[in-house]
Length: 268
Image 1 (tube, rainbow, N blue to C red):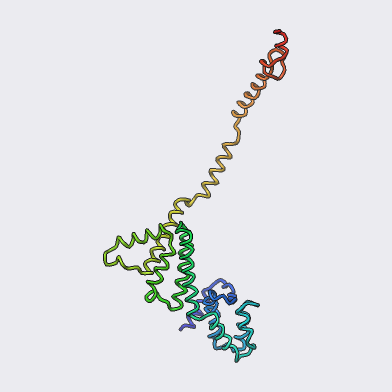
Image 2 (cartoon, one colour; image 1 turned 60 degrees about the horizontal axis):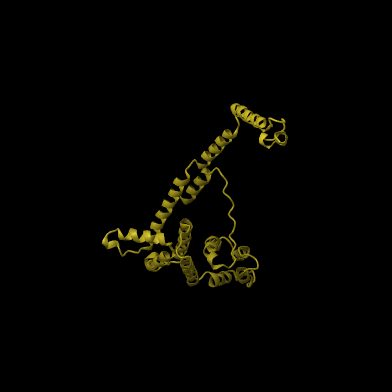
């Protein structure tokens, strides 16, 4: 049944899927989860012999990095492949190590926020960063049911003051039975709504047709700057009048009449 569905889907597809490149691992523990989620498909494929898997593993690490040194410390044989995988996980993929890394990242965000005086920040970027760290912890089985209270306090400490005040206000207007509920899920949902609201405000401020309106306004300004025939005539008249006014009535030279030296000499 499954093969039939797969065949039907492949027949309906009228486009070529892009080639998936194997993610390369440097030894940065923060990258281990995404690396392993991709490489595990090779690892669990029983049709690939271990000697080939070892070659794939060598290609999946960046040369001259910690990860490469770990893998290259084993001779590239079928027997050493499971040993290399186990050593990689021991060095970079232990659950306790990864949990510490992501929790410390949250703590560093708290310290950064405290150092900045809880000033206004880029809320969408902050929300995305928090979501990424929380999802990583959930993938390590640090679920919200067990660690939600602790994580919610950390997340609250990462928030700028105005957002934290809005969060406390939203909690206080609920029923008395829910006042003490500091659920991490509710906090993240609140932040999601705040992000949506901020994006809608920004959209209303700029407008859908802002670029088109701006171009139209610039075009109108250019048209306004083009001189009309009446403008040219009046400008010429003013210029000619100005030139006539500059001619001295005594000597017919180009200077104001009051400054004419010849007239002064005559008066003497």
